[in-house]
Image (tube, rainbow, N blue to C red):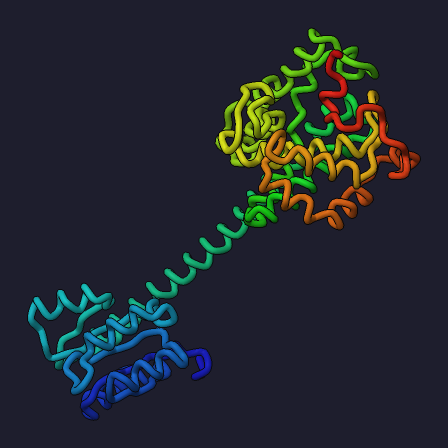
Length: 374
């Protein structure tokens, strides 16, 4: 074995004779570095950490205990095995050494076979520890990658399930994609972290999952609904919450809040529970705006598409009534991004319904109200 392949040891002692003894015992098998005081030892160890340190205790200025303490407090050197080599053989001294993190304690005068055996043993332990740490790190990385793949699969499944409900009254299923992107944008503007806004985007795609339980003759009816039919429509938030169920996953908890909350109104006149103001979960308040905006600007069986300007004007007028006024202000400030999302994820069916189309009759009403019985 040549010198470049040898383990490196750092011998720290203020007495040249002691350094010579340890160097003579170890230099045939290891690359030995020397430090004759504590500060120099710390400098050498920080610059290029050795594989093991043999450390004297009684040194002027900074003793071995202080050196050990500082080495163990430094993330770059705390892993280095330290063997105290000292004339202080009291049990209390030895106990203090181990308490500070030393791997072993050898008393002077040293026995060459003992020094070689202890060094060899602690290098082997250190190598094994390093190998296990590397193995754990690799396995942890693999597990994290696997969990990310599984999480992504779950999110895609949520999106597809939401789209299945969206297909009931939207041929392209793009409504949920736009609502998801509008919701993420508004979530970020309101202070959500990127990761939380991403979950909101996926969770919002389940907002109308309860429509699976609404009969086609009501859901797809082109004209006004009777009072009885509208009562059936109003059941879809609770149906959606039942479909989503109780889960520990954050995205599903959020999806349930959205399913129940996206038809609640700031003034307490919404459904299913008549919540008002900040009693409505913020994710429900966000999706309420995104959902209505998209419903207004897109073709539905019962309405034409509204121009974006008119939809934004209605959102503005409903601040403090239907919608959270603070969120409305943020939403109105994002018009450029809203237009981009609307264009990027447009329905093929909407391609012929340009913003120049005339507003439908009773343009001041929200989509759900427009379909309510006269």
